Image (cartoon, rainbow, N blue to C red; front, side, top):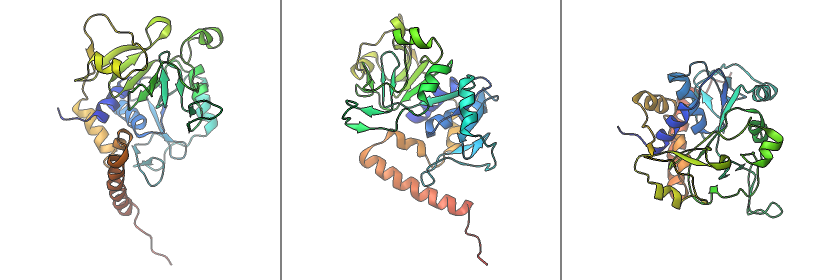
Length: 282
């Protein structure tokens, strides 16, 4: 079957979304995973594209508007208060893409380097502290699995993982559930809640993963599972929802990303011109 890495990751992420919950993400990967889940095995999911467009809409990732367009523009509006209510009641799920994640599932989206003088300032913790203290399932994905992103200890803790402080102050709610990367799928069933290999993507070996991880991974006994490939139905949903292939930008960098951006921008401009032709002025 012909599929790409981004489609494998999105389909894998989708398989883990279930239940009567509100699913949200600010990324193409997260939104498409929610849509695939809803259209296949979890029709009870309520998919939130953005607070502006509301829920129960089909996301179409775009560049020029900086948010998700929808093919149904009149979704159910939600306030930020209602979204946080869903978090506090454990009726919310999100795939978070951290800059760093460590061996116990602590995550960083705030700063790389010393807090007093960081090398890179990021977006800040946003809603992750609430997610990692109230939700029964916490999902992460990393697009470039390497020793700079999958680290022994995060530079700044935006979201709490496992460890003594969780045991003392937070309890099990908000503990990390799963990590999907471009190399495999990982859970947190190792000693003291440390990261362990659940499956590896086709063609990836344990040596490949260990060489790109900033700590010693917990390995399962026996044969290593291979991540299931996407189904034809899942591929069709992804490709129909994201015909511009905005999702692929997340995996690219440098000149490749620039070339892809220009191609997508031009296709999007043409698509929006057809969808919303200029109205006559009187």
